Amino acid sequence: MNQAQNQEIKKAVLAYSGGLDTSVIIRWMKEIYNCEVIAFCADLGQGEDLAPLTDKAKKTGASKVVITDLREEFASDYLFPMLRANAVYEGHYLLGTAIARPLIAKKQMEIAKAEGADAVAHGATGKGNDQVRFELTYLSIDPKIKIIAPWRDWEFESRSDLIAYTKKYDIPVEATAEKPYSIDRNLFHVSFEGGILEDPWVAPPESMFATTTSPEAAPDTPQTIEIAYEAGNPVSVDGKPYSPAKLIAELNKMGGKHGIGRVDLVENRYVGIKSRGVYETPGGTILHVAHRAVESLTLDREVLHLRDSLISQYASMIYYGYWFAPERELLQSLFDKAQAGVTGVARLKLYKGNVILCGRSAPRSLYHQEISTFEKDTDYVQKEAEGFIRLNAMRLKLLAQQK
Image 1 (tube, one colour):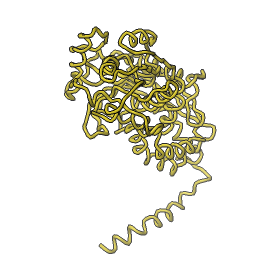
Image 2 (image 1 turned 90 degrees about the vertical axis):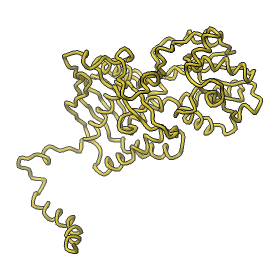
Image 3 (image 1 turned 180 degrees about the vertical axis):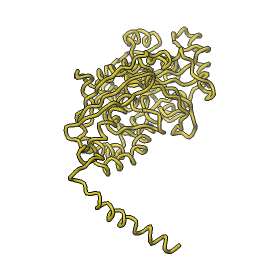
Image 4 (image 1 turned 90 degrees about the horizontal axis):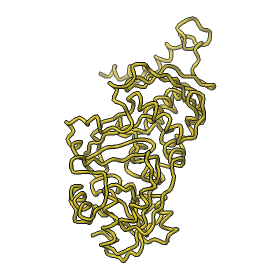
């Protein structure tokens, strides 16, 4: 029993998705706490009509349902800063779920304050990362807020138990015992966990994927696109300007069509266990390649190397849930300062699961063909490299003499 269950709770705001877990949680909270439950649903670009969730949540026991469109805020204030940092967790995961949780939790706390609620609740399991991400955000905003985490307290031991509970109380959900995937979808990605995916030897079924065509079935003709950047942020595709959310949505369509952005990963959770997740991040995958291309022309060597040495730490901060922590904000300011001159265009070819770089240009490029050329030039004196090498070899020569 957690701290919240030991205290009286009159009103709670639940992060509600309408899925299996949160559908059960509303009724369970009514039974256990006899409290008023407000269901909060964040529209992060799930690609579905969220309006029916109001009726569904109220039938399950919610006194009120709040649905907030956060797509543009999600893209501009969360996805774009993360993309400016080139954040990738353990070499593969583009952090689509991890980056969404701080925004959901922040808005949930705003609603709790506006509604006079004394508690917040979430449907994250006691084995996962999301419980940490939600609760670190809650407590960074209000250290005294009461937190309800049903998966750490209730009698249910599996999602199969939850499915049985929904049948008992006639709660409509999409999950079934035959296909018990845990699906999380937003503007940036789709993630899948659970069921047969828990066996890392088993390949994910093709029917599971929601936004990407298989590379084998993708068009035989490649598509070439151009993405323009200003100060580290993508601003247009093929010369057409888009808002942050619409730009990502457009690239999702293009990338999905060509089978781009699938990742199958066994990752290390913050709580100390390994888990297998399958992800689709078509637009994000394209933007990572494009951003790197423009940076290659515009970032100073030492700035680039220093920034890259910190990416792993930055990505871990997001994965673990420390978006609102001072260390993440400190690194973000460093990374953003480096992005001031990252303005230019990347030309890419999309073809059967691949993002192939075809060209890049920048108005303030640090690349100068007249210096880099293998042909004759007047700026670089090759003879001077001899002294450069000798000075840098001095310590190695001294070590060799000792041996």
